[in-house]
Image 1: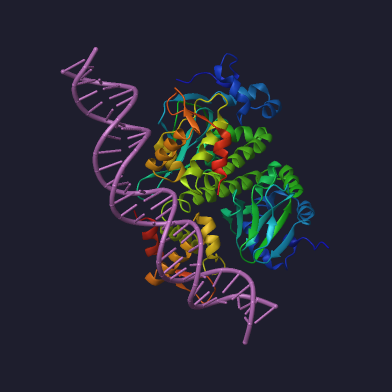
Image 2: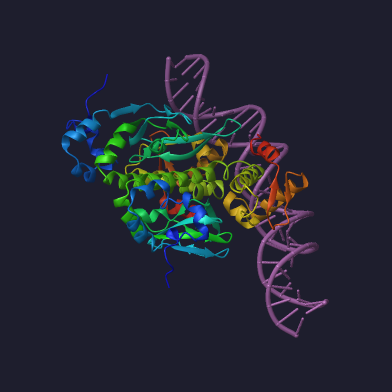
Length: 238
Length: 238
DNA sequence: CGTAAATTTGAATGGATTCAAACGTGGTGG
DNA sequence: CCACCACGTTTGAATCCATTCAAATTTACG
């Protein structure tokens, strides 16, 4: 049961996020006849997933990309011993599964961390638009570069130095994502597998930060209010 | 003093590597009038740099991308304390400085590791070709995805687990690059800053590998012959 | 041949992991 | 409503691994 094209439905509540969408943005919109756009967007699904839901699995060859509208998605690889390593996080405005555009199978397993709202865009839509709207290539380049930036951050900020430094960098990053201070909480386990440290170490450092007043817990579970000045000091120490 | 367009000079010795070039490949070649191509390629420089030469510096806004024809280039970030962290390696066929295509300043400092041969391609050439040869977009996507693959590798294989595991993964990767076993040697210091460990630890592990017969030194300096079976065992252990 | 740089090795320290147990919280069923 | 269980977090103690600082050794190079 396919719903109607959400992007062209003025009553759709997710409309506010479209300006961040690689497909439906001002530049692209201007180029295309409205009917053609509507045709293409008709098959875009808007989906809301519960936390810990599998979006796609590594090595599957998918036929869709996912633009995240709300929440966080983790891209993970499984190490030879079975433990999971989070390669990077996909935040609102990012696209997961870009590799399908070059006809490669998914290179990670994608799992929601929070309640996540995504637009599922079939490969055929992107290819169709690519022919009729050259500007899409530029938009896609932006997303691609964004993925590289995030990957680089995983190396430099999240996988380098002492556990304290990594946690501080992570907290600063997460709080840079949310203006209001909600929606981007990670379990100690996920922190660990994103930072390349154990769950216990993540817990110890966070507990220590709380005692030192660097972070204060919000009524919201696992949400923090961060003292950005002091955290930055830790992140840049040594 | 500009030399003539190397790509169109049949006597050029680097011609064999052109098939791996994003700009000058079969698909692209077929689409374009020869004269237009020659015009565009005229300003492409082929350059050979000594080891440890700076290609570009982070935060500079450049007007060129570099396709590597021979050798290895390291992309580094400098940590707050001044130490360098290698984010990833650029190998033959890869492009360094892709971020200039979205008009962003360079996101790393690029330094040659070996004697490196590159083609320096001005941004204007790429943009010019982009208009006249739509297939270039697909080629660029491939390079972009390649960069992401390498960044992911930096996280999963080079920044995760014990020092032994990381070194084993690195040696396997390096030996997968060279069929003949030459050209891709790293100093202990560079190994360390790529793997997120100290120079001493890198040295200790390599020395241990040599004693255990996992690698044997070649007359070539810092070049190894690896026992891939045994190294894979170490990389997948635990 | 002699000096600078890179590699190797040693010993002590420090930090993270491991294994274990205690604690808190949410949800289920009696 | 409470007892109980499952699950995530916290804490502890011992061990292991990597770092640090230092020195010895080798290699590169003028």
